[in-house]
Image 1 (tube, chains in turn green, brown):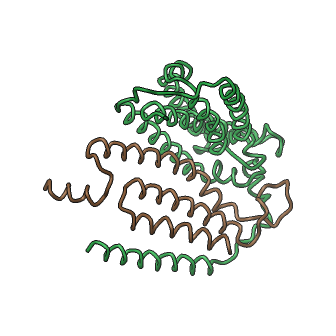
Image 2: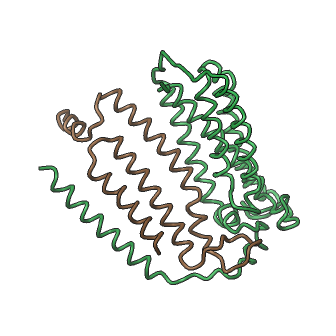
Length: 229
Length: 112
């Protein structure tokens, strides 16, 4: 009895996908032989970074806001749930040393990817997630009390909000220099060098740290309130 | 072109899963698969004609940077909203004791 509407909606869905195929085939080719205009505008030789931190910065800002809201929602809603009583982390010397080494390496790797987002492939969003993968490994091998002592939840939350405010302040500051908001107010510098592109690497690094903290918060609350094993 | 079709196939698998599956957890996993399909679709549209990444230290012609710039944030946002949705699923499981959407619908119908 309930199968009929499901079949109907699947047929509608397949028609929708077919329309997508047709429209994707008929899109006219966009030629990007010359990207030096975007590079000289924003100072980032990675044009994707110059789009999402230059021309489309407004969009990126509010996506950071969506991310913050989701992280705070997870922390608040899961924080009221019962914790697992018997939590048995993997306490073996080899695993502890291995995960600690991976943790340090992944944090450094993530920060590098975030800070060099304007001169190579990568960026803040990717870098933060790369750093957080190592943190998840460490959390799996830690007792909960030790995890809460090393990564205190309130400090992480305050740091996250501070970074968000710093990003917004960087966006509003050009107004006081009689420029439009979100304008790149720092000198573009030596294009192609790591210190170039004005505010782009700064905002990229801040986004990287923010995504790192958010992902750590999510992993921590999920492990604490549902446990592994 | 092949990658475009692969993206659409992944997207359709996710969409059919959302419609067909009864369990809310399965529906959420299908939503994640659908998200991955959209990412593959955008990246393949970006590389439809040229595949060189649009970074100035390589030689052109380059791939279209705009779809990639649009989709780069959605990966992390998808991860965060997915975890929020999982928390809501946990709340439903705690409150109602079931994750079957059919049973939940019946229960809501009976309440009114």
